[in-house]
Image 1 (cartoon, rainbow, N blue to C red):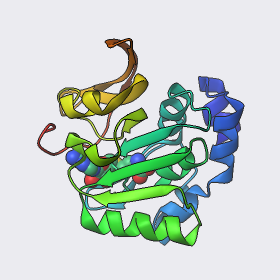
Image 2: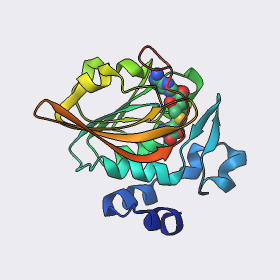
Image 3: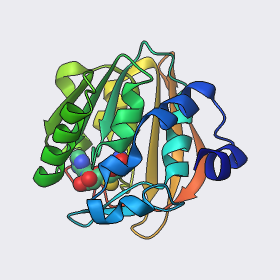
Image 4: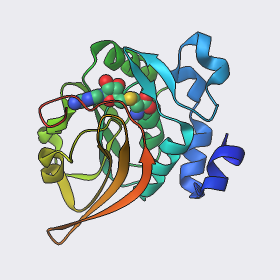
Length: 202
Ligand code: SAH
């Protein structure tokens, strides 16, 4: 997966590669799908949701340029695969999921695999998680019509955010950087994510 799908497409940060190497992706999908876990595609994880394609996980993770000291907010825990990778690259991950069975499943995965620096919440993540703000980095793994204002407000200065934004059918992965009170925005890749549903989403 790493040699054929990630490195040729520019996922080359050694720390990111090491984290992806260390997280057993097959343990985050259902038993029947384990044989496909390392394929070049997303997979269903139940409740109409998906685990992202490995390349997209690599791309979003690498874009955050984590040094190990950050406090990261993730919206859309899903099965927890992306969360687990982030947890190896930063100090703490705060992750929010709005679908109860997925929230429960992810928390069980973190316990069983001993990811100890992940804090989970069952809630609408479009309004962020104010109690622990600001966050050095924010990653959103579902796509809304616009960047939620609450997330921008909870982003530290300096801070970095990666989020897919667009219509229901197609979206652009955006990289936002906050510095000296100014937010800059850069388009990364055309992507297709499940819907970000909530107060500041769809
Ligand atoms: N990173 C996940 C991807 C899961 S798909 C993984 O590796 O498995 C996106 C997830 O975002 C879904 O689980 C969906 O339920 C969740 N989601 C959608 N809108 C949300 C919201 N407003 N708050 C929190 N989670 C949300």
